Length: 264
Image 1 (cartoon, rainbow, N blue to C red):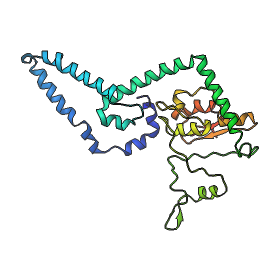
Image 2 (image 1 turned 60 degrees about the horizontal axis):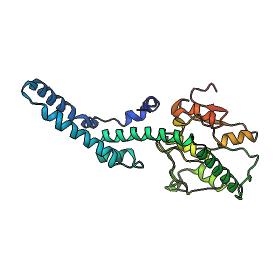
Image 3 (image 1 turned 90 degrees about the horizontal axis):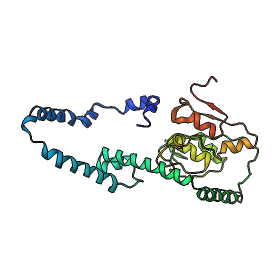
Image 4 (image 1 turned 45 degrees about the horizontal axis):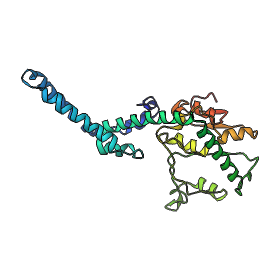
């Protein structure tokens, strides 16, 4: 529901997934409507005492049981629905989001927690300075290209003797190449991939970083480059508000954002 307003930007993809056979998902609703209509017509002759005092409490108890005892947070959405259905899955997600908001608020109101976090980050900075690559490319221009849904298997792949991605293969030959990178995204998907690459910290699993924390102060690649005298920009072919990029990019240190509505 929170992502509903983003659907317009990907409506072609949604239309491509719609088929007449999907009507089977709601085939039971007309039958249910007929049954309820018949019961309504005969309500004078039906004793609803058992329904109110047995059926409803039992049903609610079953939903609560499935919501809080069958799930664990790492379960993906599709798996949660397959275990107990849509209603318990939604109830669990809503409860988890509310819990996390309260937990985070309490965590960062604690001065000791904040101090410990800062100490750990500073220690990590010192460790990174020992890398043989630290400062190796000082003063160079930097271009980062992020490709949607590109895994490592096309690297070097040939089909009937022709390279699938010849330009990236050529780039790899003159670059440092790190193939052992694994899926590290939360609900933000593409935007979380951007967030990880630009900030070197994990996203939040239950909400996209660009949506949940777009205005935080980050030690991002863009912000660090600005301190070194660089000019920074980001380019994305979608609308600027898609996944809240226009707001999030400012805090990521991108001075200019070229998008589909940009005058240039």
